Image (cartoon, rainbow, N blue to C red; front, side, top):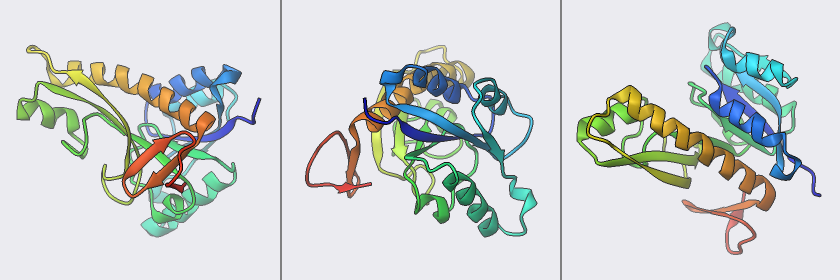
Length: 209
């Protein structure tokens, strides 16, 4: 069996996507394992989940640095110490800077079908627009807000009685499953990027990440 891909997972809150990755990586056939969990704040459930799984953690608070650039560099250095094959932003509420984005492929999720409804209120915006179908997106992060190349998407119906909390919970259930599936596929099969097109598997004609 080939060596498992190394994942650094970044969290800011409860860490439910992190837990899904930890659970999946307990199976050697998954092809990836979480080697570290990073956060931008103390005292969050995501760090407790990591500790319970005996996974190393680190915390880099933006407020501890005089400039955003210094924080960006510090985060990149902490990630680099674990030599990841893939960084997963799993509910991490900060936009990563170029030191990280230039050094590592970063996977992110969004609770809408991009490019529709980007930003912090994707579920609320979709409801306000009156769409009948929304969903979730897994993407490779870039310097923009939810603008990176799309890796995978899955639709979620909007039901007549949905409010933001109910719809968001339904999306998160799909998002966790899709993220776990895509991380495993990328770890086992590799991926290529050509322009905005991401292909998982042994394809030709793309630029390898």
